[in-house]
Each structure stands twice: as C-alpha cells, then as structure tokens.
Amino acid sequence: MKTLPAIFFLLAFSSCDGLCAENAREEKGAVVSQDITIKGKGLGAPPVEAMPPEPDAAVVDEVVESLSLYRSEDEIVLPKLRLSALERRLRAPFPEPPFLLLSPQPVTRDCSHWRLEARSEDEVLWRAEGAGPLRERMDWNGTDEAGRMAVRAGGRYHLRLKAERGAKTYVLETEPVDIPSLIYHDAMGSSRMEISLERLFSPGSAKVLKEYSELLDALAEKMDSSFGRDEPLRMELRVRKSSPLNRKRAQALRRYAASHLMVNPERIRVELSSEDGRGEALSCLLPIEKGATIRTE
Image (cartoon, rainbow, N blue to C red; front, side):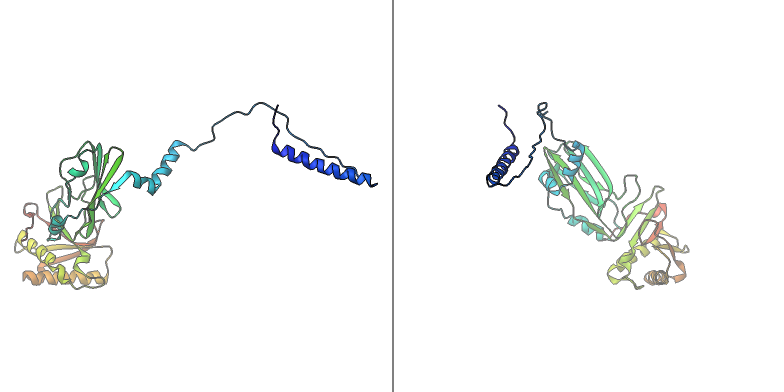
C-alpha cells in the first residue's frame, strides 16, 4: 500500500467540506454546480540517491586558510624577542653587518621544517628555509635574495621564524630594531657610509639636530682620515627632489663638517643627488683600502 502525500489529504478533506455544503444548499432548493479537479503526477521511477553538490576542494582550502580562527588553532605565536645587545650596537655610529640575528634552538629543536624572513614593516626582504632541526645561530647581513643591499639608514627591521613541529606551527619574531646609520661594502670593495636624513634634521628645518650630531662628527672624521690633506671631502645629500630647503641643508652640513674638522669650508663638498631607492640620507664613499670599520667606545 502506497502512502500519499499529506497535501493530497488536505485537498480531499477540503473538497469533502465543499460538497457537503452544496448538498445542504440543494436540500433548501438552491442549485449549485461545481467541478473540482485534483491533478497530480503519476508515480514514476524510484528517486535516485545522489550526493549534494559541493565546492571544489581547492576553493575550500583557500577559504579555510583565510580564516583567522583556523590559523590561530594551528599557529602558536610566541612572545617577541628583544635584542637589547644588538640594539645598542646598531645605535652606535655606522655599525656593520650583521644587522639582525637569532638563536632559534628552543623553537626548532624538534621541527620538521623552518622558514626565516627578514622584514621591513610588512615587506619581506630576504628569506631562507630548510628541513629538520636548526641548531646554528641565524643572522642577516642586510642584503636581499639577489645580494643587493636592502637595509637602509633610518629603517626598522625584524626577523620572523616559522617552525613546523607535528601538526603545530610555531611563530617567533624579534622586536623591530632601528638603524640610524650604517656602513657597508660594495662588490668592488669600496665602503659607503650613510646617515638617515630624518636623524640629521627635524621636518622643515636646516639645523643639525644635536642628539644625532655624533653621527655627523664620526663621518667627517672618517673622511678626513681616509683622504689626503689636499683632497676634497665629498658627501652626497640624497633627496627625493631638489628644493630650497634641501639646498640650505647641504650648506648647513658643509659648514658643520668644516667647523668640526677645523678646515677650510672650500674643502668640503656636499652635492645633492637622487635618493635612488636607498632613501633620503647623507652618504659618503670611502676608498677601497681605507674603508675599515669605525669603532667607538
């Protein structure tokens, strides 16, 4: 015996009520004619059981990976490390590489894979990765993956390490370190000294800031000792554009260096040039054989 849908019974009862009402009217002499037709589909083949449509697996993975809740369940973010000794060294005039370092043994002891990134804000400048535990100290010399000098005077940088241990991923970051000045060597062996322009002058001013004057003192002294007495001391003021303010700043730097070294201002040359992707800075190129590290007590 087949079971009819509930809607069929509702229609049947409704039709019965209507017919009974019409019969009652006919008994009183009223003639009412009404045709009621109930149409339904005949019984066909048995329904086919099929799986409901689902999104593609790759789409599901992409959506799930984008959920912060999902990431928080699989990633364990450790407290940021403060590199106090490194910060002190980088605040000294013209530090050399490495500019960042990390000893990751506790995090990578039992890991199956790790990845290390050197970052400036949200930009990845350099990365390295490998399989298995990492026991050596890792450091960054300031270059990008192509070997070009990526670190700039005045920038803020940090390391980010991700280590996979079983089903969990551990994330360890260092707090950003500030680099007001630096010295680095190019492929030809020459050395370049740089000071962030914003550390030398306050916005809209051509007066050298006293709290960073030691950087300018160290640069002038290094130039004076690296060139002969009759040679000019050349500096580049790298700026985004030439302007009356930047020309005044070039003159202020020239007078300051001449006064500090007690030399004729005509010997000091400060030329305006394009920042060329290295940021606004005061820059000086030293001879190949005399570009040694500046050491301060």
